[in-house]
Each structure stands twice: as structure tokens, then as C-alpha cells.
Length: 407
Image 1 (tube, rainbow, N blue to C red):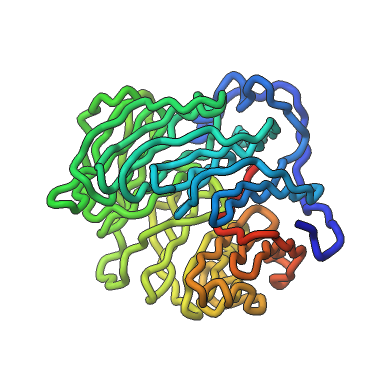
Image 2 (tube, helix red, strand yellow):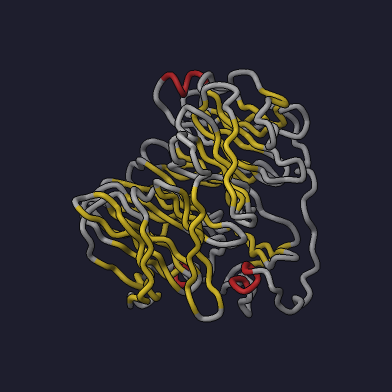
């Protein structure tokens, strides 16, 4: 896999001192990040800049990693044929016929709120978590502490994995709870987790559990739970009438309800995406518009869709930029206040969309990345420079599932 364009430096790469860290902050993320090792694990090297890469899995399960700094490609290994993928910026959680297989990309960033630590270690295929049916995976923004939740639709199993054990190459279940089968969620929140419950196969509520699987007594209504994401403020769970926002306050788990605006008839968001960790997230309101959820302000905004869309994500920069993938294969840069198109690419993934493939659109601080499975390409897009194609990478096989790692 080689770049079609000359190698360019990733703009604005952060260089930090490797000196001792400052004391904690009042920001909720700081509490979650106050680990004595600051994300370090045995055998990992701390480096001066983020080790950004694109880790891909092809339709047959071959896993490769493209280093975005030097454009080198590493073959990590093989898993079973995947059907879906979730990432926390380090690990890839791939749905297969037997459950969820886990890949460690070997690169990660530790967010210490006012600065970051960057690490590199050997990548590896770690193994699998068994379960029946579609698996919904929920992660946090930390890859060496806390938990990772998996909800299996057909068996109803609610599983919380020990993320610290994953950082040591071990798969360890903190709990596995039997529930009524349904399309549910297990959402880690600090040292707790929220687990959806169902009646007649339909999700009706979320309940709080400790990491040991003990009920906390917290229960909140949530009809048709769908979509979850973790921001600096807390963990979001989408419900039919709005969202739940969960965080740890002292030693307890707290949940707030953020209802959709009164009188709205737009469909609820079924998934959320953003630049990792940022407080504002975006999701499609069916074909009627774009939902923005500001988790700091506890407020929703509905924007019109400038074109039929298949995905949207919030950059949440000073300009409130949004990125969207249109049904015709264009990447759109949108104004976060009006939804108007600021810039756009040519159709880059029209062949993939026509074939029913699922291109992945990822936003980070300086670039966007778009996978093109049918076209056998990966695109790097400078969304702040009129959606300029900065680099194009050809791939030997179809990049069916792609994650940006090292972030």
C-alpha cells in the first residue's frame, strides 16, 4: 500500500514534555484520567507525538496497520470474517459469527485533559469474547483503565470487559449478566456500567451496576435504546424521547435526561459520532435532518440536511464544523449553525455505496479519513482547506472496516 502523493507532515502534531504531570482538574475527564501511570503499560514506549494510523480489516479478516507518519504498512494477523467494527482509538472490536474478536493496534493516546501522553507497543490479535447475535460494543476514551461493554442481542448476555487487562494482552470479563434478549447496550461509566433491560424484546430502561456486577439501585426509563458515545462530559445513551447522560459524581453514578425539543417530529438519532472526546456529538434524524447534542449545555439542535446523507460526525472545533457523507459518495463540510455546505469533495465512494459496502468517515483534529472498500482506497481529507484530498492510499484488498488508531 503506497501513497499516491508525496508524504506530508501531519499538520499541528502535538509535541509534549515527558515530565511529570500536573495535579488533577475539576473536569470529569480528569478524574477518569488520573491514573498513576498516565496510560503506560509494561513493554510500551512513550513517544513525543501521537502515533496515528489507520488499522483495517478486509472481508476475510486480514488485519493491517497503515502508519500515517511514515506510511509504512504492518500485517498484524488474521481474525474471522467481520461484519461490524467498533474502536476506542486503540483496540478494534470486530463482530464475527462467534462473537467479538479483539485486535490491539499497539498505539494509543492517554488524555490527561490539559495535555496528552502517547504510546507505542507491539500490535496483536488478542482473542475473542463469545456471544450470540448482533453485538453492540461501547467503549470509553481510555484504553488502559475502566471497562468495555458488549451486549449480545440473541442471547441477551451483558458483558463488561476489564480494559486494564486488555492493555496487558488478557481478555477478562468483569461481569456477564443474563437478560431478556434484545438489541441493547452495556455502557461503561467510570467504575460502573449502565445495562439496558427489555420487555417483550424491546428495550425499556437502563440499570446501574458496579464493575463487579452488583446492582446500584439506579434505574431510568429508556424506550428503544440505540446509540452510545462517551464525551468529556459523560456517556450518552440514545432513547426514543432523547438521551441519557451518565457520569460519576464522587463515589456514585449519576444519570441526567436530555429530552428532544418539545414539538419535534424528527426521528430520533440511532447512532452518534464526533471527534473523539469532544462534548458535541452528531447523529442523523432519519432522512429529515441532523441532530446535534451538546453534552455540556444539555441541549439538542436540529439542522436541515443539505443532501441525502448516510453518516454525519461533529468535529466540534471553534467553527462548529460538521462532516457528512452524502449518498452520492461526496464528503461535505458543513456549517454547525446552519447546516450549509462550506466545501465538498468529488464523489469518492460512489462505487462502494452502490455495492452496499459501508465506507467509514472519521474526524480528528486536523484531518478526516474516508475508507473506500470497493475502490480499494483510503483518503485523507483536509476539511479546513476546502475539503482538499491531502493523501490517497491504495490498498491490496478491500478495507471493509477501518479505525483511526493512536488517538
